[in-house]
Length: 340
Image (cartoon, rainbow, N blue to C red; front, side, top):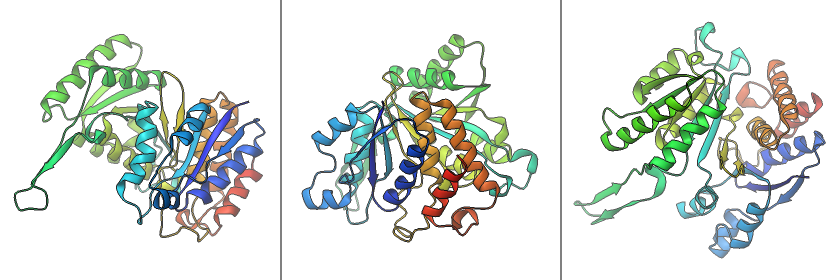
């Protein structure tokens, strides 16, 4: 039996995670859910603690974690950092995996029908780059303020994310950087890339600068299989691929330690406070994220069944308003379960 930590979180998180858990339960995989519904902004505002050591240990002891969304306008940025970044860094979840596959033609924003069928994965380095918080401000809140954010790249971090990208590739790997302008970090990525290509001669490879990569993604996303890049570029590119695949409402993601296999799985859409509590949030991103979770736990057939169920519901025109349907969050979840 696998134990899954469940953190519903804030905003629409509890609504979509409820449907994801119900759907996983309907698959009959024997999963045990450890629900930490007290890890949220209300607790942080009351106690000042984003994620206690006790709760961290509960999550670490599980086989995987499913997260709804974290963030609240009432709380400062340290709240989200205290949950997400603590889990990401303390569990060394160095892979951010963002698949993007078009479920139906009508969801694509592209005019050219021949180039709509995006089916790729963005592998984003998740623990280095610009988001480590290294830097500072000199003379803040004055007209002489200086702000510095340092981008961190290590041979160890870059090498292991490249190897993970090759491990999940079906056809090809494209490495994206800006080594023509970012000289030092770019040189390290280029060195590690050359070594990785040599280690994986069976995989077709290519390299693009990030500005050229985003142009090519819009012109013909079908050209890509696996894209691997650093933390900040991956953050941007993965949102673009999500939109090309139908929007953030259906986008799934996983934060993975490629060595231990532990993963934190979360839909991409965030807390969406403008529709929280209204009952129209799209649960498909959370349900497809749950498919990633069970796939990593060894239930590949069940994950495939779950994805097919979601695709069928989309194809029949059902779903929440963001997909052109008129179903509620709960009814959309029920429609997906009916297809199982």
